Amino acid sequence: MFGAPKASSTPPPSSGRPHTSDVAKLQTHLTHVIVSNDDLDGLHVFYDGKPILTGQLENIGVEIVAPSDTQDGTLTGVLTYYETNKDGERRIKSLSLFPGTVEFVTKGRRIVVHCAESGSFDGLFLSFGLADDGSAAQANGVQSLRIVIAPQLVDAKLVWAEDGQEDDVFPH
Image: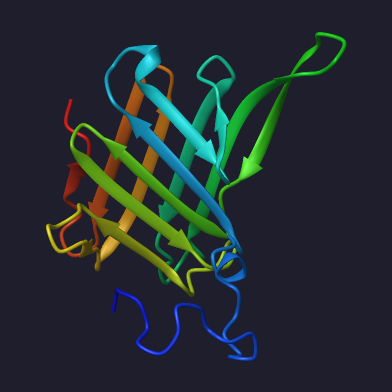
């Protein structure tokens, strides 16, 4: 897989292979939320590679409630922050996290939520943890997942469909 090709060190221009920088482009939103400690300095948020400073962050919320026979279900992800304009006015702004992928890493735990289409459960998947081989546990049978992260607040609760058991994902 790695190493120099045998015939030539660079592929010929007519190889038909797409340029690597084109293949590496983000085609949807990518949000990283990292909580390294309980202090304000321990909260790091990146939306499409751009940092949202802790002093700007209001909160990040993800709410997923599976559809049932009587309800359509809920699927939302929002990042809310303050933006200061050139006149010094501070306004609140909200960004949709979906369609996209959100990775939460906190307290030695990891949750990844991928939603391919805003508001649609098609293409939605949840994964938890990170194994030595790079894999993660897929979540099946989830009734609801609610995650709220704000300065000095980290909360994630998951409810299983089969028995209604609620689990804290990020222990206190």
